[in-house]
Image (cartoon, rainbow, N blue to C red):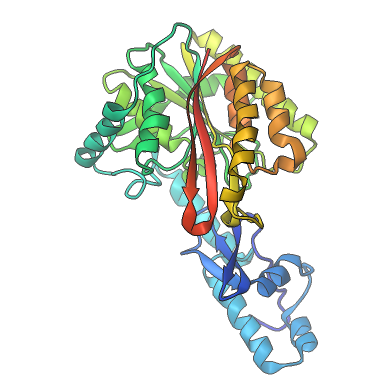
Length: 399
């Protein structure tokens, strides 16, 4: 790097977690795109500097203002390290991003992202893993008129909670004859589109599950080709992956298809315009599925609250468990009554202080299914005691 070069900003799309290390506040950085080689921890001062500097601020400006060779050399070394590992919005990062995108476009199917630590990748290991989930899951009486499911995207390796949350819900689909499963997944990253439809098939341990390309093409016609096809957003997003593998397991002999839609809430546009885009998408899905005669089923993949130190709160999660349960009960009651508008308003209240990760996918699945009622199947809180944090989530059947 030359003295006359502008100092690159830190990337705005990184996942940022505040941590305490040796009594000092530090910042952990993770790359949701998977381009950076590994997570890194930087000082709070360095993070604030790289986040807020003027876009035309040069190395020579920093050298002059610091007026200390050792301090300046340390700053340059840290910047070079972060740039080499793709944490800065630099030419180096843009070059790596372009190559990763180009390589991904050549793939026929989206590879499994969390296989190996959330569930087994090999078929011979995966089958007993998922069969245990179903065999140990509580039974629920099946009712007529099932239209959809609200499910989380919490890891599948959380023990008995997996059986209660996922297994109990997916048991309701056994023997059903739906042919297309529209899955609204939560976006955990900044995206160019509020709605990102994936066209690539999804790999699973049991083989590939196909996307409904005929339906996607029909959506393109309705949208005058302005549809948000964005396969790259799906590459490092796990919120649909778990549901793809359950569906592949449930229907091994039927040629079911999925319509995977990543929904972003990380958007700076006017909330009314954001709502308009959601409504246009819902109307297009309704028209396209009707025209093609699809027997569609709708899944909303969203967790509820994320609280505690890991999620940048200044309190330990357990201190708020009673309040958390009361807040989640409000949301669940609204879903059960089919009151999707009030549900979404409740999520967004107070700037979403409970960090609900999935409000939009839940709202969209309720709307697409035209759900008038729901039944709570299971509710859980995952207590991440070592980080004094917690995530709450539920599964509900939509009618």
